Length: 336
Image 1 (cartoon, rainbow, N blue to C red):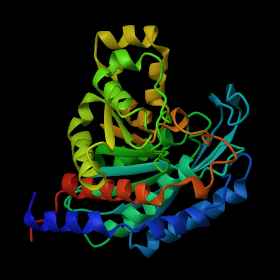
Image 2: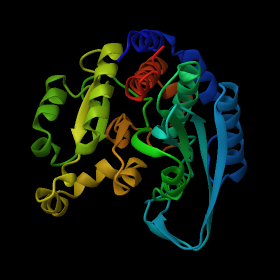
Image 3: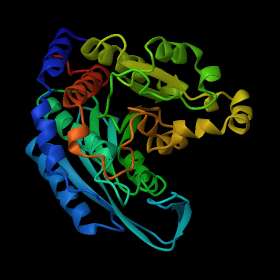
């Protein structure tokens, strides 16, 4: 990493603004859904495109239609559901580098039917707009892509539709997916642990318990191919938010022999594949999900109480800055 790159990272670490994140999140309509609230989704689309354009990125919309799709309901019991026809729109902003090698930062922009979705996933969208501003004038060798995925809440149906376009136009070598990154609680006993995780992640589970299960950290979920990405993210999050601010969890299902056995023995492992990063894993692209662990902390997940006043904007600022700094490190500045 060059000296100029280090100076950019230092500016990014202190340059993210919580008030800008708050302004965007307060401006987002919610709930947002192509099925239930199409006008709200169109307004959200317009807001994101305007924010990215203002930061100088090249934006585009990628509509798609699904004739038959198996997914889930986004209300009540969230039971399996079949959809005869679905229309969605994925949004993209691009900052072109010197090569077609690309890093993608993504977040879904729909919500479940009965929630305004401030944390899930308005916080991720706000972060995408702030990252666009932070990187606007940073010269990078690799191309950086920001993406807002549709139809995540009914079964991660939107991101797979964007992947053919992405892989045709760019060599996407890594992705960071932002999924519910705005809620923390530093009171004891506010973080729960999925069944079986103590066996798979003994060190991480011990850390959580030694800190009396305080829900004040971010999880970075990854597979082995994304180790360089997750190590950079971990370093940046710790540099900005402190040593106890991040836990890394490697999905054991990518281990050739033991993975299939664990899938049968520990159904709770499905919690590691519950968002758009799973689509990148399926496509063989190294990806990391950043999350506050959603329903494993707090009581607002997928509820009408997931409102702006529950978001910790200083925490969100730190995570946003860490992701932007990670992009600078991985994309490598053009030598001056």
